[in-house]
Amino acid sequence: MSSGVPVLLFKEGTSRNSGKEALKNNILAARTLAEMLKTSLGPKGLDKMLIDSFGDVTITNDGATIVKEMEIQHPAAKLLVEAAKAQDAEVGDGTTSAVVLSGLLLEKADALIDQNIHPTIVIDGFKKAFDKALEILPQIGTKINVSDLNAASTRDELRKIVYTTMSSKFLAEGKELEKIMDILIDAVTSIAEPLPTGGYNVSLDLIKIDKKKGGSIEDSTLVKGIVLDKEVVHPGMPRRVEKAKIAVLDAALEVEKPEISAKISITSPEQIKSFLDEEAKYLKDMVDKLASIGANVVICQKGIDDIAQHFLAKKGILAVRRVKRSDIEKLEKALGARIISSIKDATPEDLGYAELVEERKVGNDKMVFIEGAKNAKSVNILLRGSNDMALDEAERSINDALHSLRNILMEPIIIPGGGAVEIELAMRLREYARSVGGKEQLAIEAYADALEEIPMILAETAGMEPISSLMDLRARHAKGLVNSGVDAINGKIVDDMLSLNVVEPIRVKRQVLKSATEAATAVLKIDDLIAASQLKS
Ligand code: ADP
Image (cartoon, rainbow, N blue to C red; front, side, top):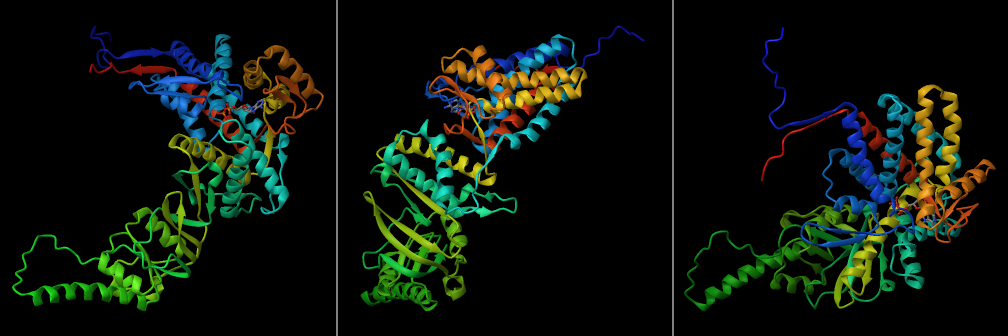
């Protein structure tokens, strides 16, 4: 058989790394990344300073930002980055936890592989442990009553959730924080749609955040409707129109300029006059047409020229021009209007409706507020702040808080934070492992071990002794204290994380387990790493 001719499967320069060696290598890379993030976990987590290739510096302890900025090269570590991204996209929180937990799972898997347990068995065990954990999770959770979104008790519960997410990150406190919390709760509850499962659907894209420099955070407001960052075009127009019938145009209220320049020979003053009259008449006809279908507000994507403005003002119509296409489309939906492209064909059915259209002063600028729209499901948070940095910072933490509110309203169950849930899961998973037996039992126990490291890390960042903290927690959970965890702020073990308000929505924790388990098993599945030689640049 052997002809002495070597079989070349890959291109020259390709490196191949297979079997156990490849696996160990990948695990090492993924663990290194997770290891880095460990010290950023929890309220006492430290910041990372990241310097990109342009020399720009970012200082943060937000897992999602860290992994995004780090420009990870190693393909296996990239799987963890994907896990962080999935976590962020699904629930907008828990990214550090997801990456750290996948690293811990891989650390435990590594030890099993060293004991000659095949990766497939580890993967199966991890999957079993994950399924069981999902089953246990709701049993640990506490239901919160959100049946009436306007009830004071519901608002209090929601307030706790917002407070937990915002207090550590948001610069504002006291009155400013109170004000923002109210706005966020109002925003979310006004767009929430009940689900048959008992929770609510909350589409965050119905909440628009507009940042306007000037004033303080406390001046921020919630507009139940739409805000256009535009002024009314003409001083003679009304500033306020109630029961507004709104024409939404994507045609210009201007005499169209010809595409190619044309030369008109005018030989007498009368001709100039009649030419201008002609233009004015054309514009007047358009305005008359809009008035005849009953419009008292005109919102135009394109321009409105001076003559047209004058006629509109005479008819008492409020008009706004050069509105963004995306806003025009949003208005079409919210107002129940049909976008008018050809004014001469417009009908009363094309008009949209809102209770009120009004120009208001915001700081030094004027903006047009549209409230009580026909299909009023969108809201606008008008965020004020003294400078761009404060506004950006506020926007980021508002986004986090909106995600938390969404998570809790979609599935109104909270679970205790500070590692309490991890200890409880670990305890129950070990029980379950015994019933499974065999080598998989070892993998399920390894999963439990990985979970238990989370409270140890939290304890360590808070300056506590990790092993004795773990022992203490285990003892308390064995006595049935399900909510016992690490109070990282005060550096001690407590019986009830709920009373400290350190809680997480069940959706976040479930997604953390899912992202981490998926990433870890994806790394364990690879037993061959074939890398093409790098192109020289
Ligand atoms: P993530 O990106 O995963 O959300 P965080 O740095 O926000 O990362 O850390 C979240 C972890 O910190 C969770 O396990 C949470 O329960 C825990 N945690 C939050 N606040 C406290 C606290 N006051 N004491 C102890 N643990 C806390």
